[in-house]
Length: 145
Image (cartoon, rainbow, N blue to C red; front, side, top):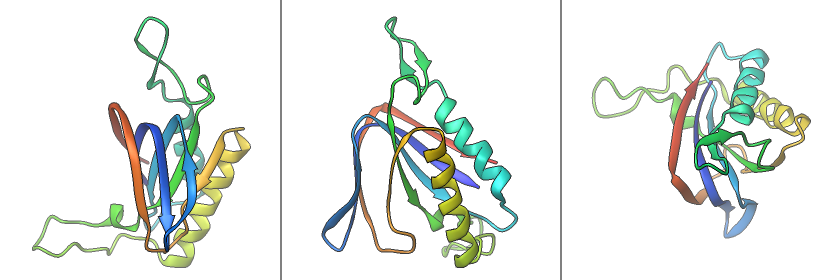
């Protein structure tokens, strides 16, 4: 599983001119599911994201987690994170999970985040989405498990 996470002051996802998910202060998660990924990888990744100390404390140091600051998550499935661009000019998606397995693990990831008491918004799996965000910092990390 791969995730690109960005600390945001706001983020939204729109499908067919309708906003389907929107958060203010929190983390935007682009989640890619690959062959061989499982529930344990998803649980680890959710724990990492919710506990990662990337928000400022009163001293201006990155010392607070999403949970510490009562932030929200906007989780968007991102098939192209499984793309391999090492050869040629067209990405290969050989490592991407099949759509049904990707959806299952994406939904388990979202449920795992909600179980941690975090406010969660989402995109729509396999939809053509437009994502808007204001990256705070900018602060962006790539996580892989």
